[in-house]
Image 1 (cartoon, rainbow, N blue to C red):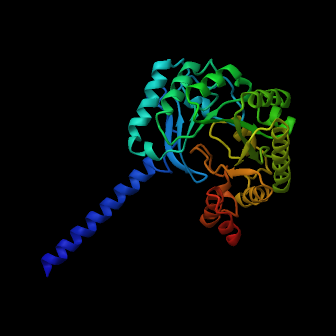
Image 2 (cartoon, rainbow, N blue to C red):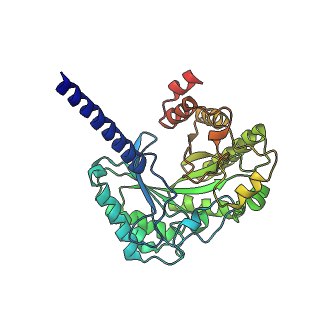
Image 3 (cartoon, one colour):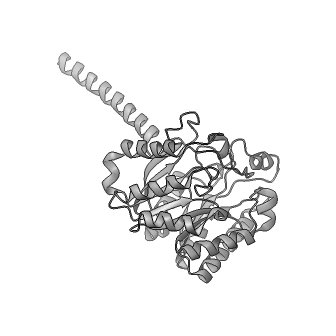
Length: 346
């Protein structure tokens, strides 16, 4: 009997150790994988990558380590995590191959690939265009992938470059992922420091339409720290309606990503927010309510739940009184297009 008890104790201890190891592996490599650890000196490794489920599809997100974004928007601290120096085309291709080798067992199930660099991959001052063309050609060999998403400001959308990327992989649909943030010009200029007028954005939409590609646009829920919850709801709704109308005119297929605003470490926006007495981060329940409303209207929309491990204490939806694991589950169900289940628990 003592020997049996000893074996059981050793078995329990082994299981506890294994559970800890599995938990550690998931936190490091799974959906909780940290995004705030960069490798700016190692230009042969990407900033971040993750195989994730995305709107019922298998998506591979690659954030390349390239020269940092030339803009320093007030609400964003990502440029400080990227390289200040130019990264060669070969190093970028090495980063791409590094990710594929790391995820080689997932290649046969991927539906889409998202390419970012914490800025604009179509900005030729930060990422050489030939690298995108070569990457697009390589993705053609990953046979199930049918969508290629490129994150960029619309001012860098060049029809000739887009044409070459499409020619390199004619089987894939191209989607431009861009930050729109808000319709309000004052918030865009003075609070977010976007430095992209609505006129410049609409010119970019014209090139998106001419290129025959799709569009995914970020809208911020509560982009101003002085907004009330009700003002945030109305402002985000108006911004979405503007995007829908502009894309409808141009026959652009639109997807909206509704991002609850968070205060990013080291950002000018965060400093202003925490110096504002009435500041409160957005409520996830309000974000979900608006997203449900828009999806019922036939708008393709999902909620951006990640704070990229950059949110400050008290500066995201997780710190509002409505937040709970159950509410987060509702938002995840919504993103998985399981609307009926969300409505049942709302």
